Amino acid sequence: MVNSAFIPSKLVHSWAASAEAALNALLQSPHITLGHLEELLETQARTLMLPILSAAVQKLADQQPFQCPVCQQPLQAEARQRPRTLKSVFDAFTFKRDYGWCPTCACYCYPADHALALAPNAPASPRVQEIAALMSIRDPYAEAAKDAKRLCGLSLNASSLHREAQRQGQRAIQWRQRDIDLSHTPQGVSELSARSQTAQLEPFTLIIEIDAWNIRERDDWGRTLKLRRKAKEPERWHWVFTATVFRLDQRAQTQAGRPVIAQRGYVATRQSLQSFTQQLYVEAILRGLLHAQEVLILADGAIWIWKLADDRFKGAKQRVDLFHVKEHLHELARTLYGQGTPEAKQWLQPLLRFLESRNDGALDVLHELEDLHQRLHTLTLFQQEVLEKQIGYFTTHHQRMEEILFLTYE
Image: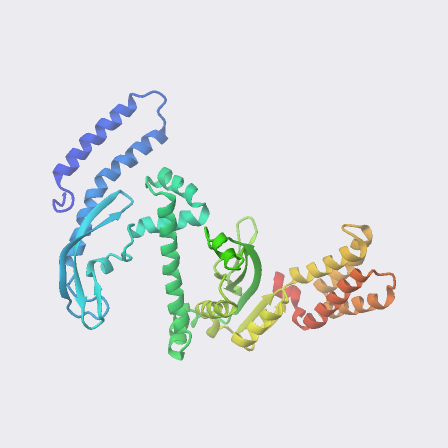
């Protein structure tokens, strides 16, 4: 049965006649493929879905009680049936809703907008916002606009995509800040921990990997000359602090045998180290920090990481990951013996085996480097500096290299 309130028979019959006429016309054209048929029917379907969506949205808006969505108190009416136009996946449509003042919260609001999960002043529907944000992540805005038109039938220009992507980014930041605020109180920490759903799991180890790198990203578009007139050089290079958090029991393999992590959380920010620390702490709680039997911090040896670990993850094991340790030895081999030379390989291989197969392999490497420093008297000043740097690295971190093979590759 057709519900006449949303899908009147007249609408369906009119659409069916139009769609059939368009389909018959297309079938008369030469070289028609399945793709052409899909594209036509997709376009025709939108013309039917738009009035149905519009009617359903209006019905939902009319059903909302005229009360504040925050405190649930009645609103003082300011305007009735105020129109709002939205861009949906089927095209633009307009609906009407009531507008009022909440004396308790001291703010104006649209109860229907809150029920429909509409952001203030956003011209796009939630579905279009999602499409815009996802496409903008993967491509430049101009290319994403072309993809949106081709794949979804959405006519969005680059500026619209940029605005919607920014809007979703700001929304994500607000959600993240709410969690950070929760982490400042014992009750909030308990709430975050309950969301991890790890209390009933078997004992597990929580892995936290931390790193940072420098990226070139242009800010202050169109303001370069103005900034330079004020003796301010625009910043182009920025540190990005990153981390990933997962349980050790979430390791798995693909059908081809490739190791993967089945589920993990990420933190990445260009904000300050303090902000990164707060974000990482929240993510660790959401991943089961308070229920973990053991917490392991993996990093490359940067001092700021170990300070962060001591501050927020007291009692956690700290380990330098094997990849970065090997990088230091490869750098030293290149400096002493040249890139890819037989001498470099001959000197390097025993040290790599020490790390991979001995319990105190890092100490063995350190002793070899110290002995090398005493034996070689023909080193250049640069070679001496690199050798002393690596001796310092292994001296500082050799205790963080215990069980390095097990923790990295098991």
